[in-house]
Length: 384
Image 1 (cartoon, rainbow, N blue to C red):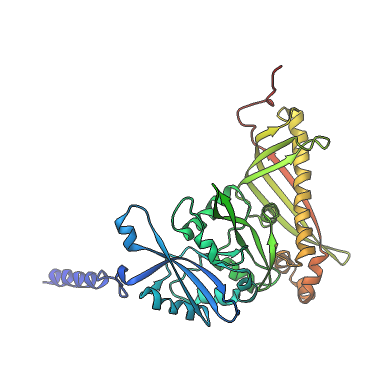
Image 2: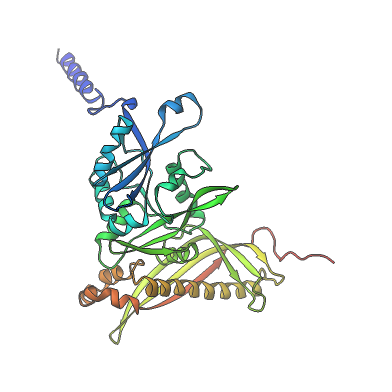
C-alpha cells in the first residue's frame, strides 16, 4: 500500500512539472523579429523603427527563409514598437532578434534609451549585436542585397563571427556596451556598418568602429585603426598584418597571418607623471611575400621579426595618438586600469581624466613570434 502511495505521489509530481510552458503562445500568433533599425523622423521628435520580420508563411512554401519589413513611428522606442501591431496585427517577439542598427543621430542623442529598453524588456536579449550605421539612415542597411542569407539581420551577426579572422571591427554585445557606459575610466565602442558594392549591387559590410564619449557617439575609426585598437584591448582573435620590408622599395611587402595575441597594460607613476606601458606578444606565420629578399632563413627571419615588431609598435602608438587628438575619448580603458591598480591615484585624477588622457604618454613594446613559413623555405624566384 505504501509503495502504491509513493508511486502515485511521484506520478502526480511528474505530471505537474511536465505539464508544459505556463506562458505558451502559438507561433502563428507572433511576429518573430530578426533585427531592427532605429532612426529619427525628419523633424527629429519621433523614433522611426524598421523591423525585419521572419515571414513564416513564405518559409513554409519554399526551402529558404524569407523576411518582410515593418515600419512605425512613436514618441519612444516602446511606443513605436507597439504601433507596429497596427500593421502586423501580431505582437512582436524579440527572443530571436540578432541585430539592432542605429543611425548616427540616434547614437549621438538616444543610445541610453536603447540599451535601457533592451535591459528592461523580458524578451530582448542583452547578447544582441548593436551597430552604428555609417549611412544617412539605419534602415537602408536592412534593404541591401543579401549574400549568404535572405535574413539581413542574421547576416549581420555572421559578419561579426567572420570578423574573427579579420579583426577590423570590434565585436561588442549589448551587455558589454552597457558596462562601458556605466564604468569610470572607459568609453564605449560599437561596430560600424556601411554600404559597399558587390557584383554591381549594394550590400552591407562591417566598416570599422563607432567611437563614443560617455553616452554620445562622436565619430568613426577606419578598419586599420580598428585593428590596432583591438590589439590594445587584447581582442585580437586572428587577422592579417601586412608590413613593408624595404624602405627603398615600398612595394616589397610580407603578409603575416595572426594566430593569437596577448596584450598587457601596465600604468606607471614616476615623478608625479603617469604613463602607460603596453606589451604585446603576437604569434604569426608568413603567408605571402612580395619580395626577392630571403626572409625565411635564420638571418632573414631575425630581420623580419625586428621590422615587424617596430612596425606594430608604431602602428599601435599612432592609433592611440589619433584617438587622443581627434576624439579625446578613452576607449582603451586606461583609466579603468589605473582605477583598479592605483585607486588612491585615481581619486586625484577621475574628475579631470578627459584632460589627462589627451596628453597621456603611452609606450608600446611588441614581441613577434613566427610559427612557420607555410610550405616553402625560400622566396619564389622567376627564371630567366
